[in-house]
Image (cartoon, rainbow, N blue to C red; front, side, top):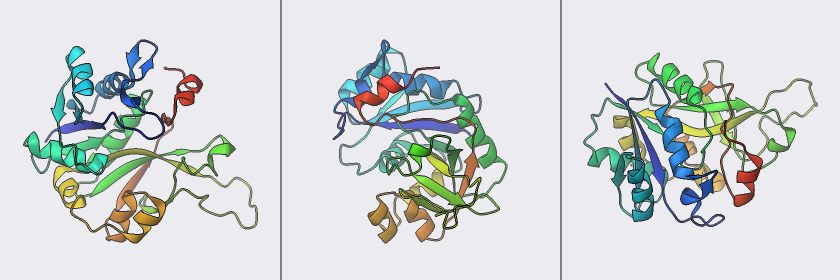
Length: 241
C-alpha cells in the first residue's frame, strides 16, 4: 500500500488570477507546496494534477511529477480522482489531497494526518484542524470552523462561528479546518459520485456532502497551522519557515 499526495492546481482564480504561479521569494506558489509535501516522511510520492501547461512546465522545471487532467473538473477533489484513475492507483492506496494555495504548510501536518488515518483501517476520510489562536479568524467566513465528537469524527463544518457560546463560557476552543484530506482511493472514487447535497450548496463546502451521505470524517488536531493564500496581500503577511 502506498501513500500518494496529489496537489490539484489551476491557473484561474477569481480573487487572485495566476495564483499558482505567483512568485514567493524566488519560487512559484505551486513549487513551494510541492516541495513542502515532499518533506513528509509518510508520503511515498507527490504529484501535481493540472489542466494548465504553464503549471506543468513549472513543475517539470524542478523535475517534479505532474499529471494532466481535464479542464472540465468542477473541483479539486474531482481533479484528484481523475488523476488517480489516469495513474492507475490501486483502490487500497491512500491519497492525500493537498491544496495548491498553502505554500507554507508544515510537513508535520501531513505526518499527523496520515499517521492517524493509518491507525484505524476502514476509515473513509480524514482531515486536519487547528486550535484558533487569533480571535479575528473565528468570525471570518474564509476560515472554516469544525466541531467533532468525542471520537474525533466531524459533526459539522461551517463558515460561521461554531459552537455558538451562548452564555460566554470561558476557555471555549474553536477549531479552524485545514483543507487537507486523506482517503483511500476507493472512497475517493465513491465520494465524487455522491449526490450534491443541500448543506454543501448552502455553505459551499464539499466535505459536508460526505457527512450528509452518512460517512465519517476523522479529524486530527495538529499544532501546526497551514494558512492559505486567498489574495496577493496574504503573501506579504506570511513568512516561509
